[in-house]
Image (cartoon, rainbow, N blue to C red; front, side):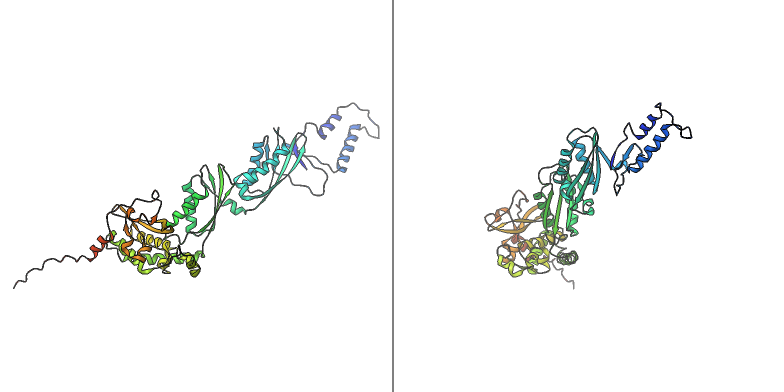
Length: 434
């Protein structure tokens, strides 16, 4: 079947022309011109050959004889193109609307139609964001009709319509991170973005998720495992970013644990609400040391085998405050959570101790910053790793000094202890009048 504009000369035109020819009149009992007989003959021939004609708006449709007739599409479903750019956009439009098939018609086309449609289908599949993300393959049927081509497109998808329609369009990194943070808090396992006019790569996403986790131990149970896919790979203005997330527990179990963790942290913090921030920071570190048992997972792989699944839990605030076993990361996350509950500014620091990966905290007291390593203070005593300056840490510790605040505060652990043991002044007793 073919669909094309009405030609200037048709069967109707031929018949009308016959009316004006001067032909002899045959006498057959009635005075009817030969043209009438010829008309009857032509109509009979048309019926016997299986050919029909009909007008549909501005189109003349002629169909060859066949067992199954194809339904004709409305005008709006046919895309008319005149060059390669329009051809490629027509295929993109079909993918964008998640269509499984569609029709393209050329008009005064500039280029080689067979080569261009093959090239357009390939580039849409491999080089466009939606094609690379969603399309398995694109096939086409090409039909030449007089001076133009009719192209039928067939598209097979490797994604569901729901997956394609759930892609979130973002114009900036902060807009994408906001959506990603919300997905992690809800323990979603997959999210996809259409990135427009902004450069976001895998390393940027990984750094953001790590930072989000370390800033929010009361909202995020653990750092999820992540797999990031870019469609297409390479440098493009637009790109679909698909992020797969995996968690060690079911969402309902994570929610229960987070509720228990926050309740435990609130209870510890509430015991020191009447103290000043410096003394509160000291008491929170002491309480953490009394609650948790430290595990040297970072420096002893055999310990990870011994504790099995608990080795990942030991890296969380939950491991320190509820399971009571934690490595340096778990201590740092738990101390961060306790400080958050107490209104003390606190950061989790990732660095090295004696050339091994290690975590600790930096806190802010009275406008100055200090190092606090709750893990080491539990092993070696509070005086060894509480309220330390940068200069106190050099030699054993390493960290990115450009990434974190400079610690130069003058307050010391010994000064705080002196405040605690100093006897309260008692007012002089008044004499007893006799």
